[in-house]
Image (cartoon, rainbow, N blue to C red):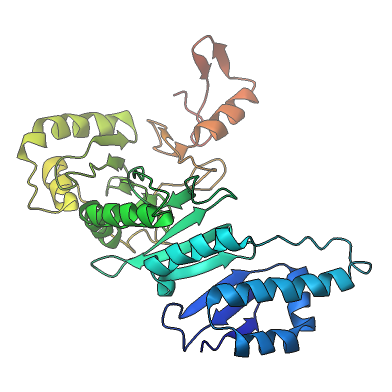
Length: 350
């Protein structure tokens, strides 16, 4: 017999089934109304825990008890909305989740339309796949969200349901090991300006900073991450970026896939990459490296980084910040191609 242990914690119902091998644990997200209903029906739910044998049987009993409680108190709370759990729908969904493995189901919504699956890759990284199913499941494919560097592609089979999505997701997780390894090497070594930490697994680019305060935006190939980056864009004052761009173009032929990306950049450009903790400030060290916008004093403005640099003082600015500053300055000149004026920091004309 399954022993269901029901516990409400922070509006989540944790169902533990230690004696039922197909389901070691289940978490249902709740709202305040359902949490109150669970408290009011604790005795009946505990009785259901002792008598129900399967997860499906308990969930249907759970629904029945909570519905009866809400109907008896609906005059006191008219905001309570119950979702009907269709037995055929649940039977199919729970069978598919059982095939995947209940130990990998980390979260289930209270109406059983959204849940999360976790897996660990070959080097121990944890990954989460978020799935959503509609009332016509399994005839209609589920929606999904996954942190992958490529689009999740799969051939959907209603008889397999979410299983075929999870199988394709796990396969692409393993295929991404190479690019994630290179990106992790960069994160452990270099001072990364973008993306901010924690870094999303779908990102295949990094913006790092060189010792002369020129930053480099790198975009890696998922298939060949140790080869030359798809994109290698230098950002900074033109008198510094121009000779470095020339070196990069001429030196690409000497790129060695056996060496790390940072080692290759330093060898080709002749400039050292700034390491973690060398920025002279807190929060990862990017303060004090000339990376912050000299107008708003922030590194990130929504999704944008400072990418405009004064050739005189080398201060950097967000495009939006500089445009707004120049637009309000009386000495600025407007033209069809843009707006021109003095640097907000050194007051020299750029």
